[in-house]
Image 1 (cartoon, rainbow over the protein chains, first blue to last red):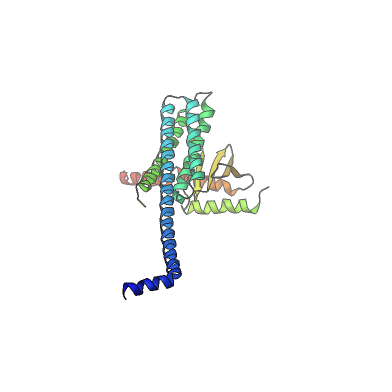
Image 2 (tube, one colour):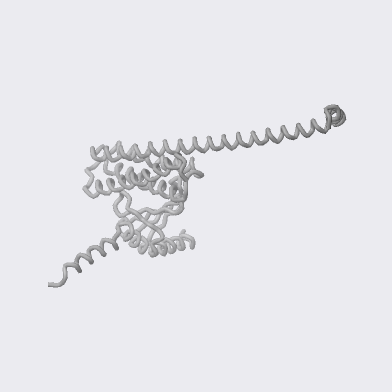
Length: 164
Length: 106
């Protein structure tokens, strides 16, 4: 086909050619938009996972402070930090239901209940001398909360770093 | 008013605890043990004087159900079984028995 024939073809079918070109541009735009949406969703998921990790780090720190103030017999601070630890567990369960597996939710729920029990005992013993078994039970519960939260923090960090 | 569902709940918890499908652990309170199910609800069993109590809470820590052994006598069995699991009584007994057997007879 010569240039003259090609030019003649374009002149006679410019409408069809423009439609085909428009369709191609639309398809390309759609593909780019889909990729952009996927990238945005992935970035959001990474952000949410990062937020969960930070909240769990905060919970681990608060629980460590429960242990510290338990050793110093500062019951009002033990009560406060245990309440905060329980609240962080509740918050995590409510805010990240999709990011957490059933096992992780179980661990957080147990942490919540154990931290609440620590707060409850700390409140009871604040005005009186606690017994040795009271202190032993609080200490064991605090240690268990630490184990559960550390396991969840590790899992969250692993996923943040790209593990499945 | 105790309805049939609460009785079934206690029966199911007792069965699952006996089969060790459900694990319990001690809380900071004396004679109180906690378990969870699928990250959605928690169960707490405790003893106060001669009465055992079961509390069911949701993940927002809202109390959904409270029943006691005066209304559901099998709750006493659940408490005893949960305590056995939480305090690892069987493991301790196995260890003690093995140690005693190793000592032999005089």
